[in-house]
Image (cartoon, one colour):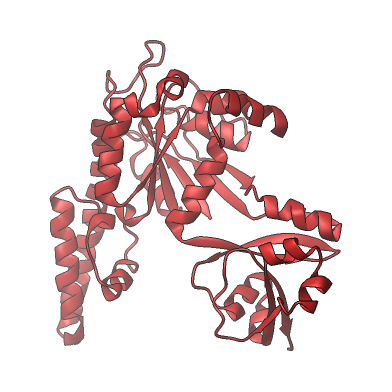
Length: 364
């Protein structure tokens, strides 16, 4: 999973990136501090792996990973080449989902590119640039399909759909907000629209906001309203605070957050929201050589899940021996779980569930 961190200059993108990846990306108080994207690979926190490791004492533990990409700040006119323009937009095309950092706090020492704090305006600025870029793509697609229509009348419905998408874009509506059927979903996926990508609005707030209650921050409330209309996620976060605690040992970090009345750190919440947004789950494999988490889409069937490990597993799939993680832990061992009949033999039509502990049987 590849997540792109975007936003206007000086809203806290690189600070947040540094906090969640400990990658040491340059962060400074001027526009375009980030020119080439910074990339950090982060392990997905998963307590289930620790529990399974206690049971199996494996040689290694391999968590699922997420790739975070810190993309340069966007400005008005990017779709026409302003700022880093097209380079910026091309980097967004490569990610699975967008983390749109929106500044929701006042600080005279940190310059805002627009001269004032207005989260709704900032979101509109970036969305407009993405929409303008998408309009060019849709125009080209409609033109291409219209030429092809002379020899293939079956694509008339596709053209009508893309005209509806263009009309929405022209009215400032992101593609992800357009109501559509499953067939239209399939059509939309054939065009790499920026505004069709899932979004998490990361509201960068001050430590005082968390102490006083985030619901008192008017900017945060404005972002929540926008996200609700788009079907996007919202994550309140303090990038500066996350940066402060990013290097602390786990126990100290938990104590620090607890003192502030915060249950989970920003990274854990960001990953959780990202998984939900992209419809992802993890299944687990466990044994003496390795305990490992594998990320798949919800609805994935057993053979395709096996293919994540190796293509031979999918090609020669026979069956999957499956037990729910909670059942395995409750019984203390795989042998005890088998005695109670909790280990199931599943075939090619089995749909994988989050937390399944699996042994795939195959023959090539």
